[in-house]
Image 1 (tube, rainbow, N blue to C red):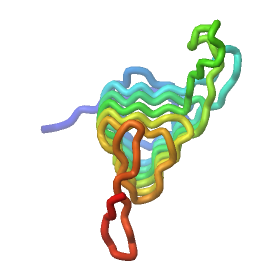
Image 2 (cartoon, rainbow, N blue to C red; image 1 turned 30 degrees about the horizontal axis):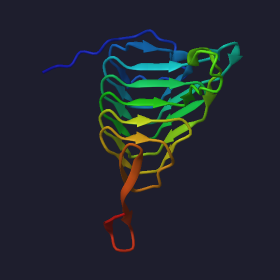
Image 3 (cartoon, one colour; image 1 turned 120 degrees about the vertical axis):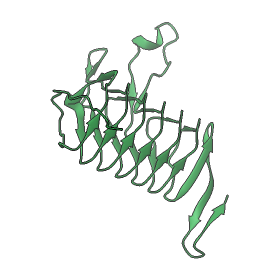
Image 4 (cartoon, rainbow, N blue to C red; image 1 turned 30 degrees about the vertical axis):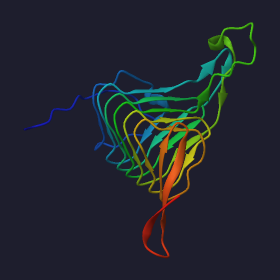
Length: 182
């Protein structure tokens, strides 16, 4: 079977010829840097928000070398989101550095000012289906995020997290060379 890839004439912030982006749903390429061998599956929404309610932002979205995303990624950024080297993201994952607080009860949520905090996903991670990564989260190196997990806080290197909110269920202990349950 021969794969066919859609060619796009987007003006990315950075783009290597060996990257593949399949039929995006919505994309703001001027805020996106793609290192070598990045793969992004069908119907991705990868959107930088440069202005909200009159306030200017400088979104930066970086997919590091060899990172891959399956279909239906929903990524919104007003500050910074980095996907580490060789990290694989499964279908229907949401990643955002934007929070819509509800501080003024008299103003609709979507009309209030957003809060932004950078998100970083380390190298060699696996983010499974339907996971949600929220603002301010830093995920360490070689972390597995289980399906349907909601990550609300930092995750240390060499961990497995699951649940809502996500919690560490095991970590790798290099002294005994084994995964240890928490």
